[in-house]
Length: 279
Ligand code: 5BU
Figure 1 (cartoon, helix red, strand yellow):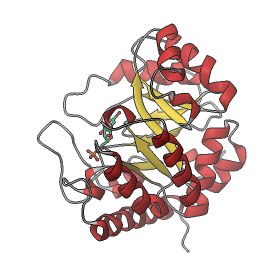
Figure 2 (figure 1 turned 120 degrees about the horizontal axis):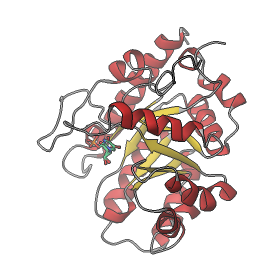
Figure 3 (figure 1 turned 30 degrees about the vertical axis):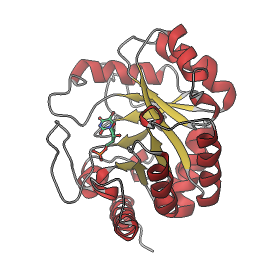
Figure 4 (figure 1 turned 180 degrees about the vertical axis):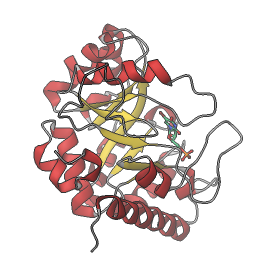
């Protein structure tokens, strides 16, 4: 069996059993982009302007819907329309972390009704497997996928070692709904017990903490380049926020467009090099 990191996105798409993972792999291949832009701004108009500019260059738009100050339900309709216009999927970076019953409510209800529009979301493994059961009860019937936070990009993160290993084991026990990890490296050989061989599985690795021009910010964020992330650490999707829209809410549309294209090209080139293909 060819290692997952050496397979093309197209090959992986044909075999993936989860519809959200399959759709993401197909979108990556169709648009030739493994870039996800994280649109972390607080005003609707800034949000939609950036999404409309980066849309053609991304496979996935990552949201923190709760930071939008002037949110109302029509914002979701507008986001869905842009996702169709530009052919990208949506990932609400909600980082659920509570008991099963509570996360099921947070995922399905409240102001944001995340499960009704976000193709994938994520959760901290800290409560144990019950967090997956709670989210799965809501998300699986809708064809959604869950990413577990196996590692973080921040300085001093506690998500390391045996915590990360347990996260991977939790995912292996729920392969119908857990489609991968937010992590800094591939997890294929993580969490295997003595004598256990690598199972036939395909977990997507989505990686934040990506930047080409700086190595971090003043609040503990750490950046690596697309090459480091995709080639050295074998990750699948690069997640970039301020590297694309800067620190001024993406006011300069042409600069945002140019950065999105730059990160898309870097991420794709690194992927092609990893799997050994050219145009
Ligand atoms: P940045 O502007 O590229 O630093 O934004 C990174 C985004 O990814 C931001 O929305 C974070 O909430 C998110 N993130 C992260 O930076 N590091 C992590 O380990 C995880 C999420 Br999990």
